[in-house]
Length: 188
Image 1: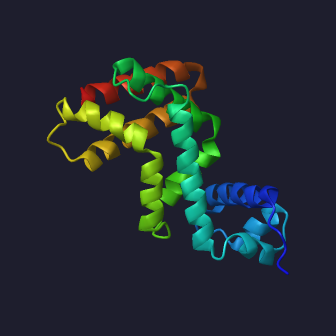
Image 2: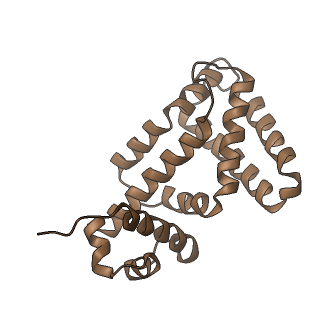
């Protein structure tokens, strides 16, 4: 009879994978992930059949966590500047509070191991953010620019903001506002 899976062990594997992706890159060995999680190497494959499956699940969960943090306590039907700023603020503060998760997500985002299906599921998790961006984009100077290109530009502005907030925490509030102002000017 197969051994029951533990949510704690699964969480430990995902946390270990996050840490080792940041420390060693996407080539981090499963043996190291298992060791970091405090489980035997073979047990890792009880939870995730392959390293790619582990990375896909980690990517999806990080995207879902980031989206949930960004939209926490925000009314989804409001398309105002204040609404967008609250989402931006939440997003930036999640990234600063969890720098390892942000760095791991950045590496996973460019990985060929992440399947189109996982990317689509992550995109669905980000749908509330996408709807707001699309609404702002459609009425602004970027209306004729492909939505994917606008999303990449916003991600670049967000990444720059996160870096400045992390490197200069004393002025993090100002960097968050400056990054938002730049993003807003692009959209509106």
